[in-house]
Image 1 (cartoon, rainbow, N blue to C red):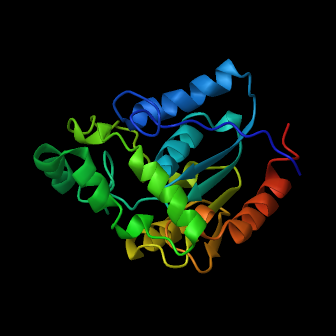
Image 2: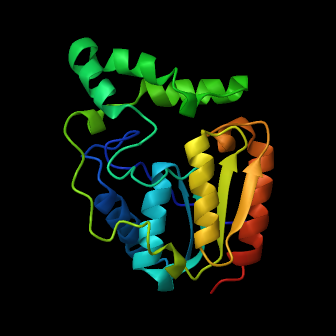
Length: 219
């Protein structure tokens, strides 16, 4: 099936300005839905984006046809990536500038890739990383941060990871798949955290099959 795709940079990342914050990510998803008159959506969130997608799904369940959580961070990661030494990067930004942070980030296992195309794409993303999340401490976490209410997700859900993702990410994905009623679990072979870039053919096949079953038939 064919799908209309709407995507956006999280505030403070990509080409977007602003201060990164989960509450704003969730508000931006809803603003896009209202501004584009989207009554029902299939929501796909990767990595920290999975937190925003899950929060939106819990807050606006009537809008959701299905949910995909890709490489979600583990519990206790609110406000920053628990797998990433944010404090170290913040200090490095002060002493060596954003270029030093980019060099360090390029060596982190979360952005490790196997294919030349994926490495090129990741290098381009890192080159434009502005470091907005290092300028100040993370925004306070909302009281309704997801984690204990995942059983309330009523829509079909797919939880994805690469087979070689970090152990914490694999465990978090397994936990979510067990907590969300009827959730499906998919593991993409021959890739780490960036499965959509490093093994796109398999990733897209799995994602499209799920969406064909649950998004295409939604009103």
